[in-house]
Length: 381
Image 1 (tube, rainbow, N blue to C red):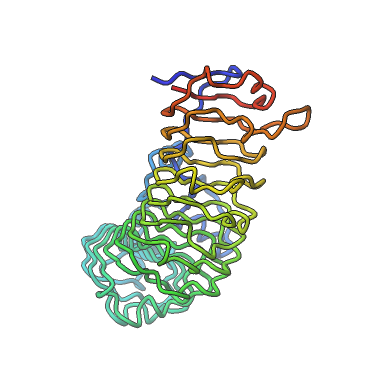
Image 2: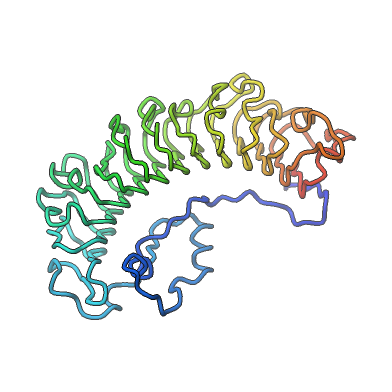
C-alpha cells in the first residue's frame, strides 16, 4: 500500500505509462488534405478510443476505415487488394493472409500490408512507384532481411513513413528517401543499424526502435546531424549508455529497460531541448551519475525509477515530474532539489515519487514546504 503525502488537495498522481509519441496512420482526411480537398465529414475515430489506445500502448490500431466501406475497387489495383475508387492513391492489402508483396501499380501513394503472412519482398514489386510511394505499412508479418530483395525498399526515394514493426529483421532496412519523417521498426530482432543510413534525412522527426537487441555501439553516430529529429524510443534494447551523436533538436528520449549504468557528464549538455527523459529499469548507481548531469533547464520529466540510486540526484528547479520509486534511496537530499529557497527561488516539481525506497514521510526535511510549494503529491511507502 502506498501512502500519499498531500501538499494540496489534488488527487494522488500516478506515473503515466503510455508514450507521448502518438502517431496517426494514413487517413482519408490526411490524403484529402494532401490533395487540397475540402473535408466535409466528422473525424471517424472517437477521442476516447485514441486515449484508450495511448493508455494501453496499442500500436496496431490503424486510423482508417476498411476499404470495403469506401465502395468498389478501382481497376488500377493488384488483384489481391482493394483500391477504392474514391481514394485511388491508397491500396489496402492488409489482413489477407498474403505471403508476398504484390506488384504495386503506378499512382499508389499509400500501401497497407500489415497483418499478413508475408515472408519476402521480391525484386520489382515497387518499380512502378519508386518515387511516388509515400507510406509503406508492413507491420505484423514474417519478413527477414534475407528475403528483402535488392531493388525494392532501397529504390523508394519518396517515402515519408515506413512502418516495419513486428517482423524478423536483424538489421534496419532504410529507404533512401530524403522526405522520410517517421521510422518505426519496433519488435524485431535488430542488432545492426547501417552506419550513415540516415545521413541527410533532414525531415526525420521520430524514430521508434523499441523491443530490439540494439547496443549503444550499434547506434553511435546514427542520429548525428538530423536537425528535425525530436523523438527517439529505444525502450527494451541492450544499451549500456546513451548513444553518441544525438541531435540538439531532440525533445524526447525513452531508454527504459536497458542496461544503462551511467550518464556521461556532457551527454545532456548537447541536448538543449530535451524535455522528457525516461531511464527506468536500468542499472544506474550514484557513481554513474556525475554531479549536476540532470541539472538542465530544459527537462520537464525525468524517470529514474527501478534503478540502484542511493540518493536523490541533483536536478534543476524547472523540473516538474521526478520518478525515483524502487531505488535504494535512504536520505531526502533537499539541497539537490533546491540550492536555496526564497520568494523567487523554489522547485517547480509537481509530482515526486519515492515509494519503494528506504525513506518515509518522517525523513522529509522540516523546511521543505517552501522549496516544494508547487508539489501536488510526494509519494512515499
